[in-house]
Length: 596
Image 1 (cartoon, rainbow, N blue to C red):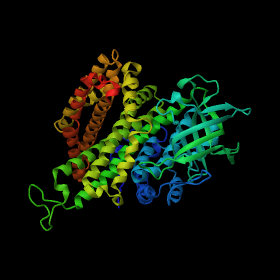
Image 2 (image 1 turned 180 degrees about the vertical axis):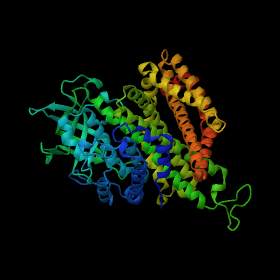
Image 3 (image 1 turned 90 degrees about the vertical axis):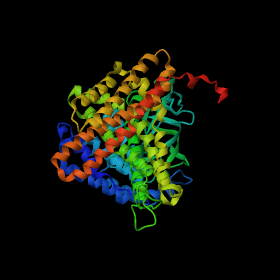
Image 4 (image 1 turned 90 degrees about the horizontal axis):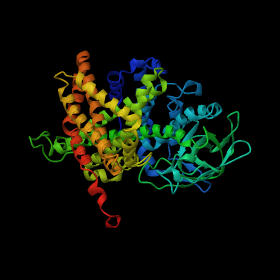
């Protein structure tokens, strides 16, 4: 059976020693989590994920969700009981403001919990995760009455939330959506249309489901400029917060998917369902992007999570599975063979996963901290800098962490060999579950286009230039011999990123295909540098902590060795990416369509 142990110590090291969470006591909620409280929260998060969610992962995958003739959906056995415990612990509303019955703690801690929960049971984690995203959109763009009515029960986990964008003819290009909203005399709208691929669209975990639905008000402009956002509850909500009649929204079908079987992916049919406009008419995408951006960071964390649990199972297997002998002599003299962890190729896979996981976690938490600063700081300059980094790095995290997370799941399966291909061992589930992260919330090619086409040139390149300056300043400041194995490779990789950026500036404007054709490689080049910068920050913290706490030397040396492996073996990929970018797109775009 698969195993999972939440990386509590690694996470606390990142929060305390790398990101220095104690320095942000001026931000709302941060003073409530001194180091001892932080350790307790992270420890409890790990405990519920290990003990309650992980044991349901395999069974939930095997059973899946059920749909009856009335459109009601049942989740796998054990999910309802686990969900009750999850919401009783206050985990859904961890970062929601107290005035809406949340705990008001840093969003960064919610990201920690999302990683642990997604690694333990990704299908389960999506139910509260989508609720958190819907809450973020409502709290930013909803009216005071809407927030008062809908936010508290969602923060408490009594109600859940969804996002409804995709239609059969309309995925990435939302301008093609046809779901319509007709005004009613009472100020509400009748929403009619069909949405597909709606995660957690129908289930039996909560009393009500609050759907956030993109639709076009009758007479609205064509394209994305005519899209509005609506709250459409499964059960209508009375002014006092009690539930009313069943709304005219039903699950028409459950999608039969490659993975995440324990999450209900629904076709949702709206037949004149009562909905309520969020924000201004024809400005729905602005509101939905709040949820989409939060969801993209959440999906990036899912990629990391699947990589982490896959790595743990691969490492455990590699230490137990006996095959062959070490080239340097028998390591298990009393047995007929050595454990496969002695073989360099097995080590390669394990080290690549381990080096990715630790840096990806640091990068995700640093980005989550930027979100906290952007939304909670009273310093306008600090808010702007954090918003810039957040906007720049969100597509990088979503694209790179999910691509590499899937690669890690495949590497783990490869280490297991033929046994990894057998369903009962559970390793194949990591591959199947990780695969969707590269597709939903904007396929990774779209993330790359967003980075190159929108985020790089935004505000005349302010965010990118500031990020490059930040990394350059770090390199210039960290000149000790101990840091050379980290800063010198980082300097070379940053140079590759800057060269690629200049090439895009010189070649993409006159020939847009150069920008689009280079975007995927550029995203990964950027991601390798961002992960390398994170490893350099981790190394600096580890070296400092070794001096403060010599007793942790072996644990910290493991981090330093892992980081140096990344710098030597993984970061040099930036040169390969730069070569692909500067080759241009002539051969890529030259063949006529009929030759494919």
